[in-house]
Image (cartoon, rainbow, N blue to C red; front, top):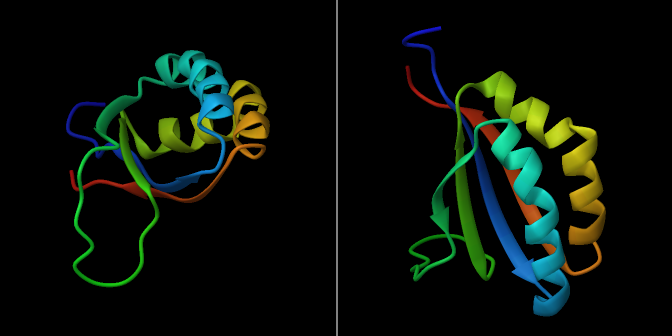
Length: 99
């Protein structure tokens, strides 16, 4: 629907095994593409100005909040998440953007 708000994943990650993390990245490619995800932030330099942080930050944009939730809950992403859990830790928030 035109003008509807987009959905976002806001993710903070600590990678414990960089080689295994590559397997997670490969596994999440299909579900992210299927649900229309677009990387807005994917790692990169950062500065903590208040509060706590993790080593890596990711922001993904989806066409809608519903798409963002559906992607996370999809069997394909849940399979990728099982790989993720062997090599990293994260905090993930799914939020609706401003329309």
